[in-house]
Image (cartoon, rainbow, N blue to C red; front, side):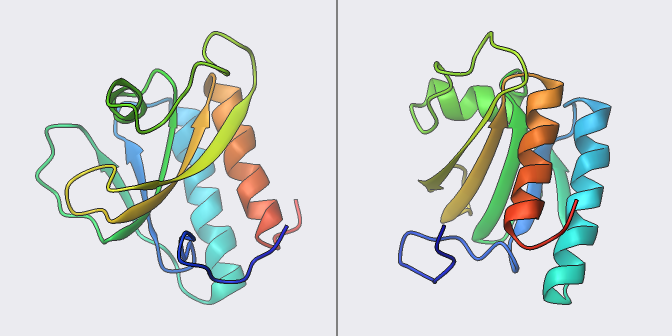
Length: 136
């Protein structure tokens, strides 16, 4: 895996973590752990925004969107053809990542971590932390 900056990359060290306010509690606990891990790696703690589709909160241009396939944020991305979840939907403990352009208003580019269920989403979050340099 290569961590060099490219035009299609997302600077997760400066990205805001965005999650569905109504996603699983365990996902939100893992996101707090991810924020701690990224702070230890980069020296800067990323903000976590818990949103709903009707939210009026603004989000920075670079974001890390995390959710289970059943979250409203991921369902919206899937319905609009931005993220394909067909390969993990209905399966157990799987996740996938994708860099997407303009997933929501105000977000230019995002790294999306999608889990097939609660545990898959949590595995995706912890794998991202590990790949970023944090020891489990």
